[in-house]
Length: 167
Ligand code: QAP
Ligand code: CO
Image (cartoon, rainbow, N blue to C red; front, side):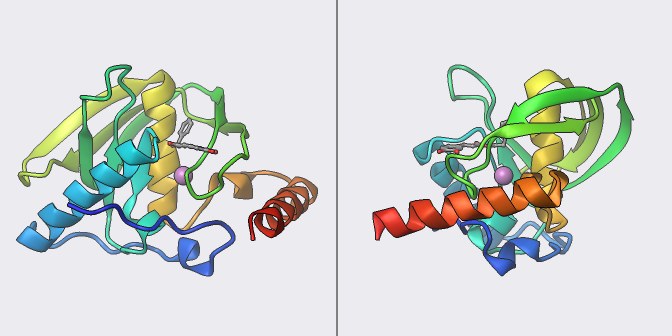
């Protein structure tokens, strides 16, 4: 197992569109283990392969309070959604920045688990928001990109200032 380096916004590689996983090989299983270890170590509640510079449709999520309910979504597809939620989000690729994004309140997602078995999951609340946030990463979209140009520019300025202060 290994902790992977998380790409930091505005890294261009975060805009890469991920390809579907064709076969769940040992390489994919090992990547999933490393992604889970990286997410738990951060700590975070969700991580997409895009964020660790692997451009394949893989997500790990754990929104449980006990941090022992790992959810693996390979080739996820939203098959139903309803309602509107306005949840405060953060992102391991945009540390220290939080803000609301409007998304569906409930989503039904179809995906493969780490064993390659297909399953359907109905979600709402934090889990539904997290699934949508992570699926955006696989499409090359970061949550701050829902905000106005002005707010994005201010976010970038804050991140640049912070980066200067740690160097
Ligand atoms: C995505 O985000 C998410 O800024 C997962 O300094 C978040 O795990 C979806 C984190 C909220 C829905 C709601 C962020 C850790 C973790 C930070 C995360 C930070 C340290 C974010
Ligand atoms: Co994120």
